[in-house]
Length: 476
Image (cartoon, rainbow, N blue to C red; front, top):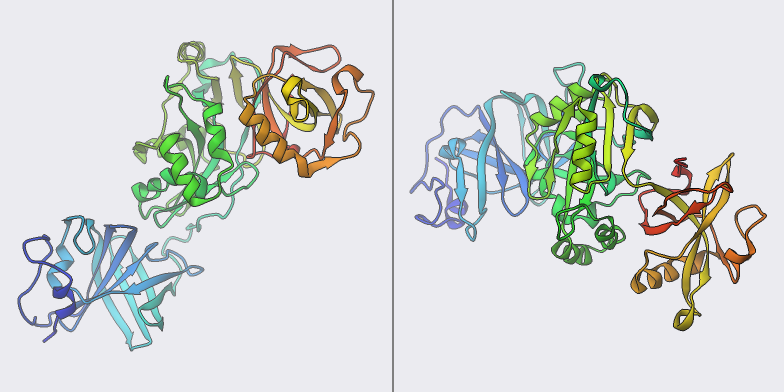
């Protein structure tokens, strides 16, 4: 006979749909297990083993590991009644464990060892099939570890790093029916790693910005236990519903959780996923683009803060016209049969833009006029040419006073005595110049390149903390 006094004490009959037995229960077969996905205050998976008339239970925040290299935390919770093995439903918020519960897997287990320190079982479920050990590390803390190799010899654990594939600038391709077309979104590129319902966001320069966008964490919960790597863009929309790179600026630099939460309330973002690079223990980078898009569309990504936007087979001119009508930046043409080339810029992907933009390296600044004589008024810019940075002109428009003040504070510790670009330099543009280390990357719009390879009519769009100086490519 097994007692469930702790279980009963944490639940109120009539307030929760969970089974609440009135007295001791009889032991049954002692070989069942169940794993329930539990969307409570934090997503976790409840792992339960039938033992002497109860379900001995652990909360596993990231789910059971799929390979031998991974150990995961398992927190021992109170024993549950055997009827709980079939429980699915919504526990009301305010009640213990409030949130939705669903059966993720169930089956039978073979017991190899059961002691206060170590429990070793072989699970035979619909999703989980393997040999696991639970190791007691103290208090209610345990570690769960897979002891055998996955049944699938082709299984690959989630990669730590996949660098994004980059497009080249150009016109619409002539072989229209050989390409898929996507809208080009005016945001920052981010690879999203989802593991055990938790996300990790890395920019193009491998900067972890997960804390900057707390509203995107629920994407991990929506995907659940499926390990996946997504490629996409973090985008902020203006009041007019058009992507706004300016609005996104205030979110890019925030690394303090409290400030990030406030920013998410003021200027929420959306993660627009346009590729899948790893899914369910398989790398997908060697699959053709159209196959990867089919896998991505099959994930059903549709939430308040994440979407898989549509793509179009052929019809590039019409897609570009639609992008112009919706005031989007342009389109990206991707060859249907192209594989994903991590970290490489490839002509298999072609970006076609309405507005000319250029990434630039900030190499200095000049003072403002009038009341701003002692502060920053314009930025001095450079781009890489022939293997070194070359002066590319001066930008003095597109700034607010707040942006100028922020740039002044950011550039102050980077000051240096001499220009980081070779001469000759135009004296009129660099009068009173203060030079800085060439570390900050920004972006400008412009009309054309002059004969001297300077930007004509540049206007500042913002900093690009997601990129390094070495990432800048001149788009002539």
